[in-house]
View 1 (spheres, one colour):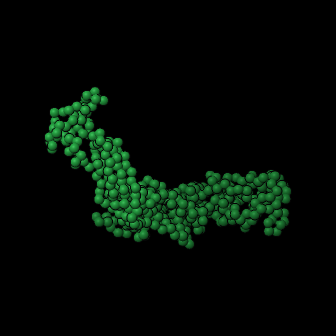
View 2 (cartoon, rainbow, N blue to C red):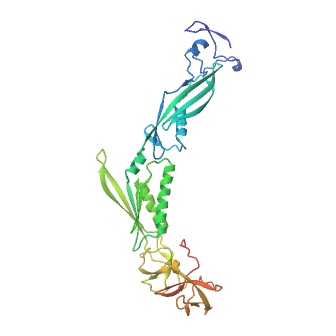
View 3 (cartoon, rainbow, N blue to C red):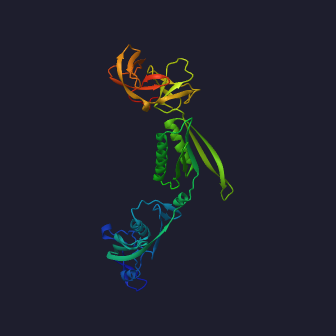
Length: 383
């Protein structure tokens, strides 16, 4: 390192020229962090501060969900415990002198009490070619509060109501459970993107169906549309003025009324206006127009556009009501004899296309419309 003509302004000693390096071929390095430092080493290290650390760090943590308050908002950090949070907060607050190179550090947390963690931090590095090290201790105090989201949940806040109902019936257990699953998944997906305003306030099963109170209209709309997408039906929404904001604008609560179709896959119905008299229909789908299978012939059935998913019909039973009975004999391509499951007498019934001629037993449904052979397995997804 060559001598310069500069002298330390504090003590008057000569200051080595630190901007010229033999490794650099004697060329000045204007980007060197010490290029503008005129002090000699002795005076430089008198005022040298390796690490700048706060006297104390206060961390606001939600006692319910563990979110941490940063800046003006609450953030989900996913920490396993408060020690992880303390380490992260200390890491963000510590600063190292710009002249120090090859910095390495480690931290040892010390749990003082439930709300205080003492962070012992050890630093090493090189400044002006001289090894330097320092130890600092930073107390971290945990302040347990309630975040905005948890405060709203505990205060029963909601912006939207989703009412799951069905036409001329009560929603099935499958439909109720599916609505719960959909709502939970939608909230989970929104939380995964950092949306802390997404939550379910209340889920209530009623004699008529299910009521969901959710935090945003967006969630309510998504749940409603997904239910109709899977099961068919309609959605109507209505706004109710609940209050005004600080600017005098109206704040509305939206109710989404989901009306599921009257018939569900697996039901057997008898059409009241059946001009061709082709027999009962096993419902396959109620999305869009009702679709199904004629249990007398096995032919496909689809309701007209005007009838939609609710043609005039009466329920005869369900595939779960079917019982196994013995095949007595096959009469011809249109008829087969089976044992009546109640009287145990041989009875001739229609032979649908899905009938297996090699079968010894078949599932049958006995109703006011007679005795009919049902498929071995119902294909609910058939369109």
